[in-house]
Length: 443
View 1 (spheres, rainbow, N blue to C red):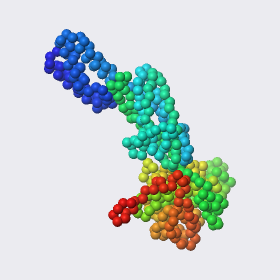
View 2 (cartoon, helix red, strand yellow):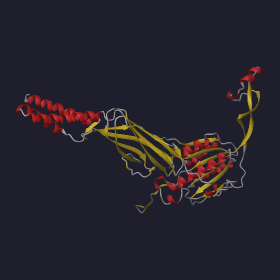
View 3 (tube, one colour):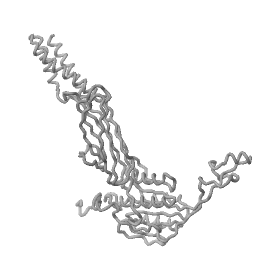
View 4 (tube, rainbow, N blue to C red):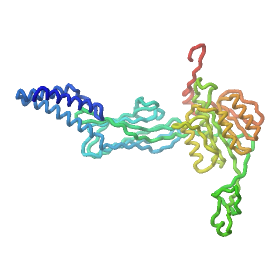
């Protein structure tokens, strides 16, 4: 073999090694010097007639080739599955996380590293996690091995101390050859959502009477029809919906007949949640007050739905994973409570729009005599103006006040002061991020 052909072969081997380093397989032991040295040793052994040198160089190159091929295919037949025992829970409840690894190949996986991303607001019981490079996530690291056609199942207990929309995943797998020369990494886009509903407390903890939560004021009821309880038919009128047409009665009478439903009396309550805790957004956010307002809204909504009220909820914060504010129209269907709790679980405790404008626009669709409940830790002049207009229009308005601020003296406005901390004593002084500027110094 000439020197020129040896140099060309070594250059090709080097380029191949560089392509490997850019691909899914990375070298943990070998460098370019190993391949140059093995190539030179092989040629020198052949030219010098030394079989031992040639055998040593061949062994090095064979070990590198076998290790690379093993590492390159180490994750091809490895399956990863994660599951949660529950997808919706309440605070202080726990969820079982199951992680399954399956090797579908006859080729064993000598070592396997698993890194699973978990929200940093979830706690893994009896297992240590480390901060992740992903924002708002912790990393759960596992190391195991898989024999041929083996399944490994690991379980962990996740504690859910607070409300929110969380995710478990994605995951990253890392495996390699038996010698530890090469490793291959692969990210698996597998994720499981977990909703933690807001905490609910009895109305007594809010300082409200369970019998008369709005004081001695009589709630206005208005008539509507129950579509599940038809009581007869009548002739069709232009304002009737086509959904109410009774086709069999129409065929018998030879003219369009519509169903008549039993009238029922209903109470409509709109809960409006103000997540502003300071007048200027750059002052920060009092998370304890904001979360306490969410607890109060969830408690009042579930109380009203249990009494067959038409309950809707609105907030000036956006939902997690979207740019839309929380808007749930008044209703009392079987999924209304679930929709309200799910919306409050996904609600970010940061104000993203004007609360007075939200209150003004949404209450225009409310019928006369409906009840409007405003939960706010802040009172501003625009909000006082909207409350005045609602009272002038004949709405029943109740202000649930969080914090110590001057309440507006409006005739007909019912005011009740809520506790500032509905999360429990363990949250006192936590999640409070306030920036105040005094003489140019940041406090």
